[in-house]
Image (cartoon, rainbow, N blue to C red):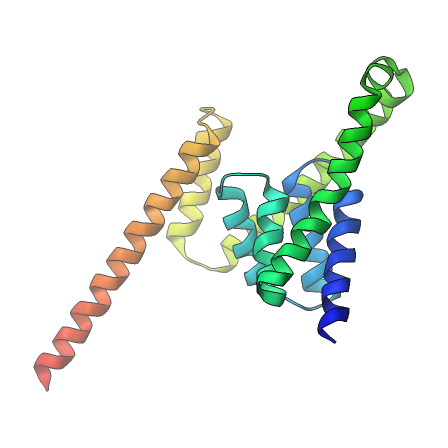
Length: 195
């Protein structure tokens, strides 16, 4: 059973990685469809947490997501299997492209195919953005919604770098946790003083 699950994890990450164009945002949405909707190995909130951590951590998003996803599904061995499944296809494909780079660069048919693929990638990324936005709105927490809107305005209109946006959001998150902790501690102390 465990071997079967590991094999399925490997084949799933290998297949998704082999046929994913457009980077980490695309593969994260495909992971969601595969592991949440199809296999039911994770729930949607877990996948959103994995997406957020993978995107805000250094390194390639698909590899970051695979580490966490694999660990969540089958511990350290699951992480290793998921990472190998994720990195093998791009390693092979990029190696081949680098060998035939001059032919690829000047080939008109490949240039058109890449342009068409960009349109498809834009649609998939838009799907990810809409789903993430919906999930923020579903929390019904005004602070989260305001942070999302402010982060969008800062990046889209004022061209604030992603790194600054991520640090801003981490800062807001830490302040929120600290305030919640103080509130709970205060409520706990007041309860203790009554007794």
